[in-house]
Image 1: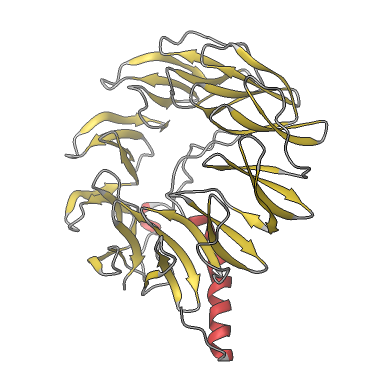
Image 2 (image 1 turned 30 degrees about the vertical axis):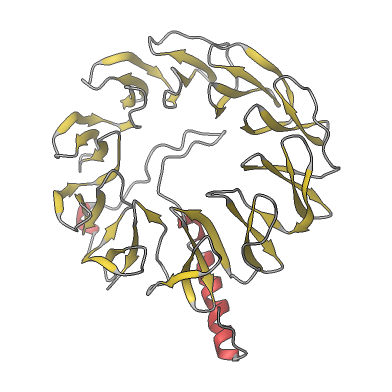
Length: 396
């Protein structure tokens, strides 16, 4: 990577970094997210149809060489999923294929990614349903809200309550819940009258009531009673009684917990795994955990063994074998053994995705290869991550 002492280049570099902070939250796919405090599935309302004008910025797609491969120019686009991407023409959404050909004309108020050959869409009466890749309506657009199909069932909202329909739009679990989450491993988290519990695909309650329930691993759920957390399995059996101030995501059967102000690791079988003295433990994936000492982070493995002494302000989770670290004001990349892939030379650094990582260098917004070199620098600052080999980017 070229360096320069030219003050104007540095000013531009930091201007890019500052502006990059404004779209840091846009680094990954738009997706439905659930936090512990609320069901965040409901999409934000968009302006009315007549309030839309043609956008001054037109979006297309580039390939992994940086070449523009879809240059038609749409008012807005989403990432590709299962070979199709949603596009917006003024107020209406439709779908294109990877050749840029319009497969489904823009006719929807909102359009979401395809999952399991179906896409959730919303009409201008604000009703939700599903279409297939041919554009045929498979679930009529009659619902106040909907999630996605998981394990053959989809949560739908009729008036004020949630239930579940099958692929034939038969209501197999009646609309009686205040909030729901998708089925996973045969059970779903639902909320009714202020209490959360698990149900099976027959709608039968299979767990006790809790204040909150959150899936954290395959067939394992974190539960909260009062201010304490524990674990249950998909059958509702208590694996760990609610005794902890916090419980992290799990790596295998290992988790980070906090009890009486102390952070440490534990497993389903072992109450405590000895770890270095720390003020924080964070889940990184790949059998790694970040631990903090004197406001610096290092890494340990699932057995509490030190992989890397604390040296960085921040370490992020691993993807494709690499994570990012912050040293001073700049960012770099490291592997699961703590070895640097790059020095901290980037104004911002995102995770690897499909073999490339988006980053801000002095040259602009580029994509890093696993060998630590830039594959290319994008023509536009607001380029996004690659999905199915293509990345969306303003082109006009």
